[in-house]
Image (cartoon, rainbow, N blue to C red; front, side, top):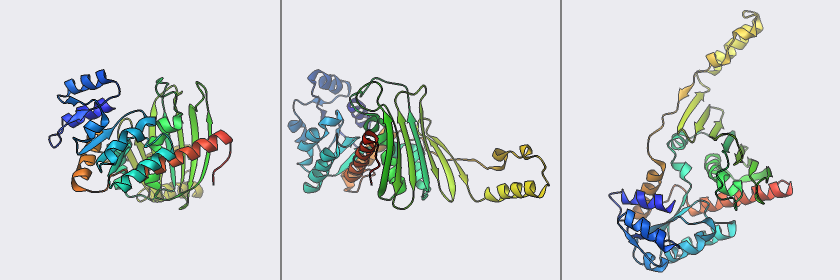
Length: 322
């Protein structure tokens, strides 16, 4: 991810890519040469030269890598999850507050054009269903599927529900190693919203889909294809009720003559074409320059990690967390 960030920064006219650092010096040199910048031999040296930085290292090293930048009050985009656990994530939040450093967490799905289109609808969800499954990639096997994959959807769900989590129920299975490879979690929020989230890295196919049900509409978003559809209550409910009444009155004798899908008007969601990574970095740079709040703050990142830990605890112990 660090290389992808470097490439994108090098293409942004409002940004000067000052340099890169990597624990493996040869990798830093190769990246620096590719994107016409400088390879630094220490984090401290790099931190002394920049106005902001991306932290795209292995999750266990987020805190120690971000600290030299945070204590200088520099804006940091820290890849998701914010920390390896809530303790690390909380320390990052505290450092950012103490030194007035802006932190944006790299939950890139928030910049997926389909998710952004969904957010613009300003819906109040009653039920959210998410499926993120794929075949085994053999990466990040030391991390469970909750922090590896489900964390994306936890943060999106928290942003949509806009309420405190009241209860967590979860079940999961470890197949390949000690950490869970499959997990299903049910989050109940104080405002009554319920979210059902499934993540698996042992599936036979790849699916990344988000469905939102409200009193006003149903919206389905395909993360991967960056598309979506919406079915609104208005304009549909009347035709369905009319068809049901015709069946009840005997006007329609055979229910098989009524096709539900023919009665429902499905509209495509108006989705933009922006590249999520470019949009994320442009947003980050704008927040640093204008001293504005990020789309996904350090506090948001901490909340996602905290809920992820609750899910793992509920799954591991077969209990619900109230």
